[in-house]
Length: 450
Image 1 (cartoon, rainbow, N blue to C red):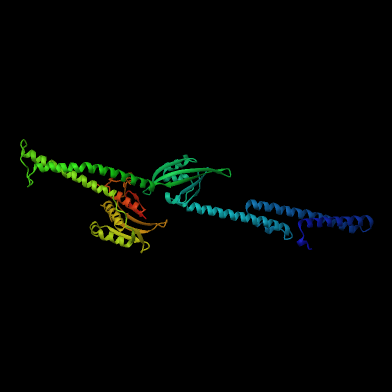
Image 2: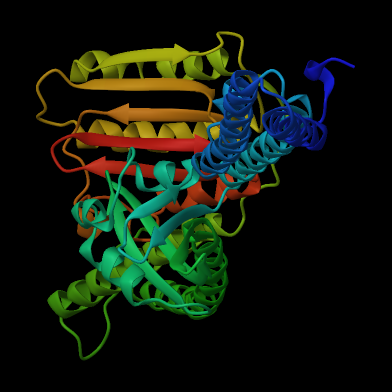
């Protein structure tokens, strides 16, 4: 068997055997023969073999040390520095390195798997280290806060200092709530935290969830219940009063509508009384009509769902407001991607929503240079169909932004405050929602998501 295939132990035994053989032969020759020169050369050979044994041991020791360092540095190139003669050692090192490579690949796979899961979840997640540096922030958090990559909480202070303070103060198991406006969009956030220690380092995972849709739904239900009670009570009280006023007025006029003569009252007093009753009757009827109109908030017909081509819907809106667009010199742009986009909805109800929004946009663009209204439709990142109506009008003030969907709340002098409330309820019946983004002086964008 050649030296190339000898094991480490066999090579050591072979070297020791050669050293002993050469040394023993040298001693015999020196002691029993006159050939001392040969004995001298055998002695030199024995010394050389001893030095070679030491070098062989140190070479393997050095290779082992370098291999252990390579493990610490995760650099497995040391295999190439091993002697080709050390087949057994090479094989052992190769097994260990293959195992480490497998573990490293497995670790990378688990890391990317976990990262994909974190990126996929809808909940916004932010992971902080003990120095409040951001170790991880998922896509949902970036979309929710409308930010790109950030490294620490100081960058979040530009969004809202109260949010940063809440993140600092909240601990495991606690829950906080905060309202903020981001790029003209209201966010009602619940904030939760979980703290843990990993390899002696402390971390905190903060989750952010926008509960505005849930609050809006509860608000709609509450307003509907309140409107039902109010309209019922007002109707029950107003109609009898209106009837009584009408009867009383009829006693004061004849069949031709002229004032009757009543003893003890002058003609002027009778005329004043008739006029007062007429005004009271008119206001009572106006109140009844208002109540009947208000009932529309709770009497929206069930949607009759069918396929609607969005381009046809936009055409109907454009034709409906054609004259007003021309008179107001408003440019209307439409964009649909894809052009054959189809929506499952009630045509009349969704058309009514767009009519309400368009009229509001016209009001917002009064006295605006180059007024522009944009109607667009497409699919968002979640794969849901959305219709956007954007104007370049005056925009909505922050203090009004959270109130515009409240019934009877209106910033317009002659507004009833019912249009947007009605629109939100129609979207609720479609299992969708209506959102608004607005900044004063930059216009507004209403989004219908189905």
